[in-house]
Length: 324
Image (cartoon, rainbow, N blue to C red; front, side, top):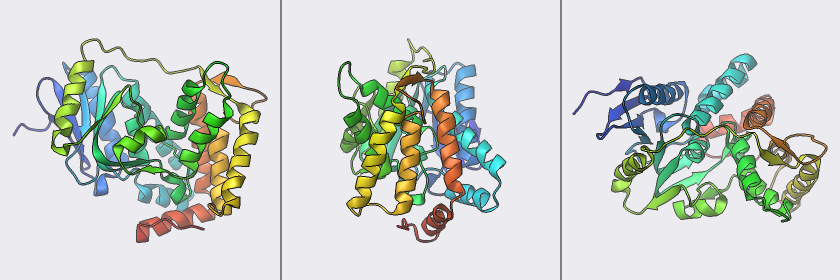
């Protein structure tokens, strides 16, 4: 057993041979808090600066990761430490963005729960190798929040990429909006494609979970030789007011169908706001950074809501979502 390349209280970075590194989460339920975020940044730094081919992020635990460390968010929100919380959310966003915008390929290897921030990480990796039994989803609405680790931004970006010339854009927008607003979870990796969490051109499904990390390593070695760091996008087409009107309508329909509470609708409208680029008078192309700022602002505003704090508290004590 080789000595780890890097380690902190929540992660270990292993050399898995052929110039590939593997980052293993070891936090409670593999949740993503400060230690894991630091570990991801450090691992990418090590891989970029050394003679490494790339990075696999994966582990052999029952669940890849339950997502962001809610306890950390709850503590700051209760204490109303907004500057600290803003800094934490920004660090989360920047770390997730770094998975895509780094000089080396980053491949995720998943199994079990891939929720919230873990799903956001998956969507920003260069490729993901998912065990068929991966439960993938942006579940933040269940705890009264919106995806705040670049996930809402990413859905806006993917929606923009799905818009076809001359096609009616609103149905695509509504479909993708509902995926987040209803906290849809893919109950198998295959279903992850239907929800838009996985992309056929970059992500693959493995039936034999034991081969997961080996497959991810193989993928890194495939991508490494001609790897070019992508540039951040500045051409994301958002629909502004026209999109907002359609999504507010869609949100209210969820309520009519008794699917959603008033607080669910409030959260849904924040998702709509980010996905449409805010109150723009017409359709417009915007940058990922612009959308990340909107996303963070919406996330922080929900952290100030009593009902959101009740949802977080309930999830931390019972492990079940509260419908308030």
